[in-house]
Length: 354
Ligand code: HEC
Ligand code: HEC
Image 1 (tube, rainbow, N blue to C red):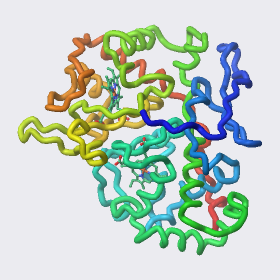
Image 2 (tube, rainbow, N blue to C red; image 1 turned 120 degrees about the vertical axis):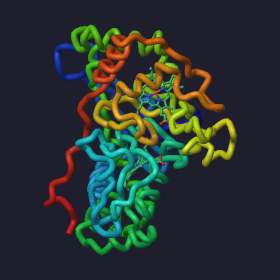
Image 3 (cartoon, rainbow, N blue to C red; image 1 turned 90 degrees about the vertical axis):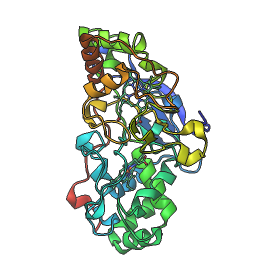
Image 4 (cartoon, rainbow, N blue to C red; image 1 turned 180 degrees about the vertical axis):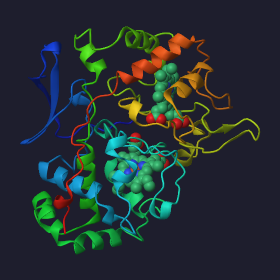
């Protein structure tokens, strides 16, 4: 994986977690000067990715949060980032593919916007090199927020006088520019974090935090089912691209979406998509880049048969021969990965700039 070095982020593990059950557990902290971002239990500060030219500040995070929830950043004032990355649906969208302005459907399922702090490349195919670049896309995408141009976005935000003091605080003066909008939104997203799940408390020593069925699911995840080969480490992703055969049509022998290939033009990347985090995945149905799997059980059935056979199937995909009980245990384990999300509360209407 091409992860650039983390600038300025100093990892310190000092604050102990509240709650007597996991007494030894530590919440790690990402520090930028006087700004401290306390990570939920289980998340690791040394994996935080923040570009050198956009250090986190409280003021940028606050501005970015307002922008993320502001529908006036869309052509007809009906769609905000939060419309498809909905805090009440795990920062994803319950629809198979998201509808943007004019209810036009997009081509892919909305992935969660949580724990983006730990990823550089964004989108299912990784075509944006970071969150700053990513946030440009939806604003002018005709099936998302459908603004005519980024200049129009800047004009729209500049027209709302209530934004002036927020830009002033975040950037030193009240000039509204597209790079500033992108930096603020990215900063907010980096504070939207899910951890402190039953799994994290279990790992931290609270053996009662997971049920016996979930413990069995964890064993399968790391053993017989070999999920951990791709969904690795504390954010349950290798940040790499794999072909599971999702979207393969056995009749026409075609992939509906070439995924990573569209970015690299290399045959090996055909049908590959980024391994998503599994944190809070219980809240983000339906699943996969095309939303083709309705439930977590459906996802397990796909893995059990070794994915969908196609010329580019990942070598790690093999039939698993799981029993029904084992499939249930894997699903149960997914529930052990859901925890509270930080900075998720939408701004009150009175907080929105006039
Ligand atoms: C109409 C629905 C819609 C709107 C509005 C929308 N998104 Fe998305 N978002 C998506 C979809 C669909 C994808 C996946 C697209 C792809 O991978 O090609 C996505 C991908 C992302 C990702 C990548 C996540 C990952 O794991 O790679 C981030 C971050 C994100 N959006 C943030 C935003 C922000 C910030 C805004 C507002 C500026 C926004 N989105 C507006 C639907 C939407
Ligand atoms: C070869 C790598 C690989 C292996 C092995 C693997 N996954 Fe995945 N997983 C992925 C990729 C890549 C996707 C997205 C695929 C797509 O949309 O085409 C994904 C998607 C998922 C999703 C849907 C997430 C979402 O937000 O839509 C779940 C749930 C999941 N995997 C769980 C598991 C479990 C449980 C196992 C073990 C039985 C497993 N995975 C094994 C790479 C892998």
